[in-house]
Length: 440
Image (cartoon, rainbow, N blue to C red):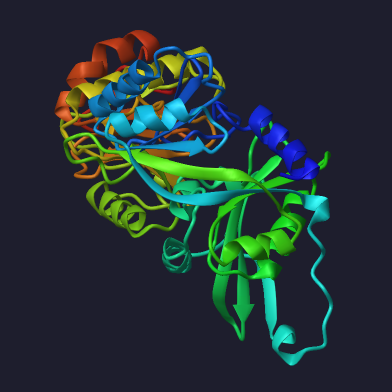
């Protein structure tokens, strides 16, 4: 190992290994837990174990078994990266516990400043080729085409679909991007990467082909707007390694991913997801507007409140940070979880703004991702509704009202909400006669 590679490896070991993920504006369905020198990250569909120095751990076998018990309790397959310079006892303990090693890959590190800038050329082929950011603003079909392109790529440090599932806030905060090679109007290759919050690193999740221009573009993107001197990390094997080395990366070691799966069928999706123009998002909107006789143009007039609904005044809520609103949110979350059925999906929707989908029984509880919905805002109409439309809420900020519908949900929350909000405006969509009026 060169002196430059050793210096980069020290930075990698210090800043990235055993790091608890944090700093995201929204932690979409991610749970991170520390266990001594380990960090477990649970995605609901699978989990990842990362570790710091384990040389001082006497009972590695017991530590490995404990992780298996945790992941078995969640029915999550687990991935555990082992580096060539780790204590050999770790690999032995993992194999003894039933973990299966995958192919070994090169750990590649670089100073972004050492990756050369894209050359200028008059070559006709190069002139018809350009590399540009491709993620923000893409429609659903275009994003899916990138996912399919990325899924076929080898040696992925972090799959694009997993990175994108972190949410659009990653893009808006310039924390992730996808750079595509466009030739004659068609995207033929791509690289995706993320800035790792709280570190000097940008992590290349994967690259679809040994294209030097993509690595140069990745380094340029990572350096843009960075106050310090960014570093890059990637993993590769085969023909991808010399391309990285030629682009200024240093080979700093070898890494092998060990995998183990507990009995049972793991979930196919995270417990929560941000929705943009996803087909299910549009479908729920359409059915909600038809069922509750409301559109964007008529939303200030409210929804057609169904039998079994109760609507309260929200004059007690003064700002979006009002403690009363936080307590209302807690009451609604508990009520929906109490009434939810296995497999239920809860949609949180705002007209012409990104929404979300979550599974009430998989969020908001101990050891689960945080509750993602929000029942009322002081400047936007907001809807929470199950996919079958049987229960939910509608916050009408222009009327200063909050409607809860669904007989079971109303029974769960009515007493607490009345204590918090006071005046009831309507039941079953009809005034209850306790609203002040003026005049004769």
